[in-house]
Image (cartoon, rainbow, N blue to C red; front, side, top):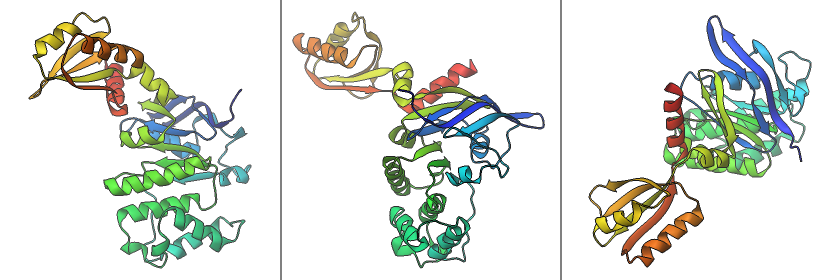
Length: 315
């Protein structure tokens, strides 16, 4: 069954004078997906997002949102109401209260449902109900970012574009923001999020795209990315001599290499097999009488994959 696309770009390109910021991007994101956009500074992520939000005119190429052509003119105002865009530098009005700030944007969007009820809903979602009468100037950075998110979703968009939403936040604030995104995902919203905090994206996203020098060099499901690029590793420790353990490993066809873990009786091995193969290796070591104290299967994380792909592109 063919799934509906929330975002479909065709040959999307943006050039500033001699600088090619986005180069011939074909991006497809399915409805209900959480898609992570990663890449170094200057890769074109923000420019791409600005075009998707109709804040920037493409030089060439087309954008379709849920099958409808997105243009910056007034030909489809309903389509733009479906978008929620949180740039990385959106200003807040420090002299307003939290409630007045959201009420102002609620009026701008001409909310269809009773405005007060919608304000209460978003304040509860972003965990700022007890701050509704506080001046924005008194809020922490994490609270201000959650308030910005509330403003972004107040008109109930079906597509959310978030550009570096957790930049500069402490771990607790990142966790709170992450939980809100999960709630929006469970409600069926399609979310495109860029971030340098790749551990957050790995927890949130169903698919990822990697940008380099304006090009979308990789776009796939997170599961497929791990399958193709993440080397599986096994951490082993033994009560006995490591030579005995190494002798058992060195002729195994799926063990590619190993290295000692400093100050321990442990090894880290690169393993080319499946989970069933891992279980088979464990079984064989126990049968051989190796006194294992640890056998832990893991795989390279999203950050390592990104760095390895970057090195491959550079070479």
